[in-house]
Length: 503
Ligand code: ADP
Ligand code: MG
Ligand code: MG
Image (cartoon, rainbow, N blue to C red; front, side, top):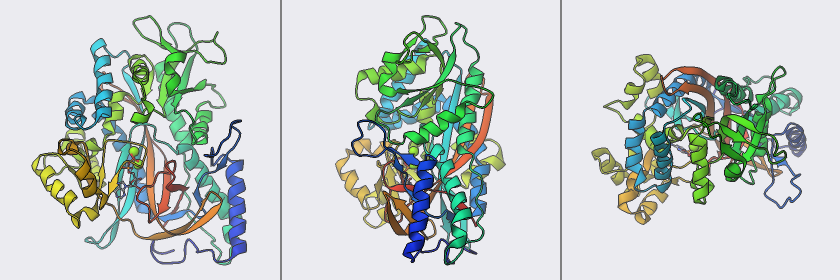
């Protein structure tokens, strides 16, 4: 295993008995340890779980890239906490995209409404995830460099399943790989603290909230989507919030149920009170409102849904994230940070070493507006040859929203030109070729794969004075997809869970 591209790792598994054994162990371990999702089939009793799609081997990943991504996470956390506090900067970018993006415009309006009456909670929690691919720099000795795909500021998922995937591969490395026909004797499999790290972030916010001034027990609520299939990922995190020495009540509440199960106390402090449906005589004060929903227009089918988001935002609960922090995750922000010349990045990160380390992880991203750079990018995007190097992204989360290569000029033909500015054009990152075997829905898929590393980060800050109260790197995610697929979201059905074998 001397290089990423050569060598025989991961093995191609030609022997059926070997395949069967690995598959059986993976299936059983996954269910036994909650590396699972709810199935898409009818399940009125709500009792079914199936294996999450997973690679049979941890994918080789360059150690230097992995370490760089982990080390830089604290800087990313701080950067995004600062962006979240710069209302003027965010407001100007919202203006640029809002014309073609009603969802972003409505989110901004929630912020304006709360600002008008005054925010009562100065603290914000970010459970972030910075996503990367490895880029092979052909102009620089084929050096391997991590390049950021995107930075997630809301509902960053898979921390729960990711820790389990690392454990699965560790188990296979002990019990199965040494006995293959081409035995694998040693792999460098780093610890993955994603569940513990994210839970520690939630606890930091819970403690910072303090005791109830109106004598209620305090709690954390997870605001979730109805019919969520990726529920075990969330449950792993939920169950890790309490520790052996401290019990913290955590409740799940459907985003569509916020108005019926919470209310704001009639006090100047505007505490958010939650009444569990199973026990209407109880009332908890919400210390932390953790959103695993609300990141896309689908969660806001009615004015009531916007009212619900407004209720959370104007309350005293520490929002994870606030509306401004959600907006800091716009792809437009990433594009502006990556603009060379007048460095917006250096405004937020004056420290040169930190600035340069972050800058190195950026790839070229262009606006599609009417600026000079935007007009150049428009030509690239409409050119049938040039467009092959790019992905075009709207201001959306959750996968399945982007346009790749030839789809870009086609899509531009159907979007009114006035709205092009609400998209960004990003250079495609092309990682070195790798192969692996994916177990999905009980079937094996063998072949070329592309890996995307995510590094979690937790950050708690005070918007009144800019003070950062907690800032940690919080474990990692490796998602892998067949190299024929453009999108890599596990939940969207394209990618699968993986872990890193450092090389
Ligand atoms: P989302 O917020 O919907 O997850 P992403 O920016 O992560 O949007 O894009 C979705 C997927 O598209 C990524 O997981 C990745 O597989 C692919 N992708 C996005 N940007 C790039 C890029 N610059 N190069 C290669 N693949 C990309
Ligand atoms: Mg995203
Ligand atoms: Mg993504």
